[in-house]
Length: 253
Ligand SMILES: N[C@@H](CCC(=O)N[C@@H](CS)C(=O)NCC(=O)O)C(=O)O
Image: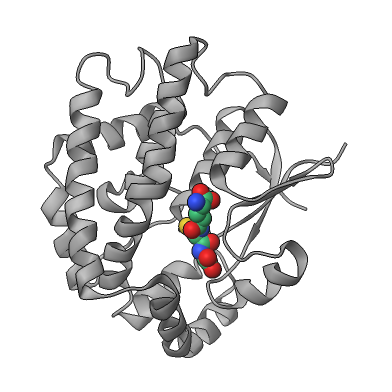
């Protein structure tokens, strides 16, 4: 039986959900790591979409992070990511849905608004893990790719402002909600914690996230990080990563 194959951006929050779920369950899997820009031509003809994660396994193709996690949960039940209690499970899935749909996109737009100004830094970070020649080429092509990304994601100053408000609310929420047990739902780690921590990783920078963020960083982004550094929501994100992120189960193709 062949292992699951995951198409991903290394630096990105939604693919992080998928590979975290695979790693958490100890499932050996192959990762295809793409670069923003060229990814569209690689994915569209094959899968009819360019957003990732995409997971292929045993003839099934899953095309959103929630569908990927759901598939992984059914195919590899242990350890579980869904709470066994029915109403807790519904609550955890509702939190996942809210972070996927309402927190991720505005937060992404705010972070990208700050990152993208620095060509070398953002291109190198997006191309992390690629050979040096490919990184150099990507840095040169990046100004054109950046223009497409800005248009595609609707990145603007107004969008960044909205991202700020949404991020503050999300950090307040995780700090408040995890206050009693340390977790968002019930008293153990679940898909709700995995999703919230993955979506908030670019705000709190857990060291276990697989792409490093060397200093000095673009000033706008450093300012973004400084703003949240002492927020109790970031303490939650860092703890969830430290205690539950687990090791990579990536294998070569
Ligand atoms: N709701 C989707 C969002 C997926 C998404 O926006 N993925 C981003 C990366 S984090 C992407 O691949 N963007 C590139 C594009 O759409 O061209 C999910 O949960 O999978």
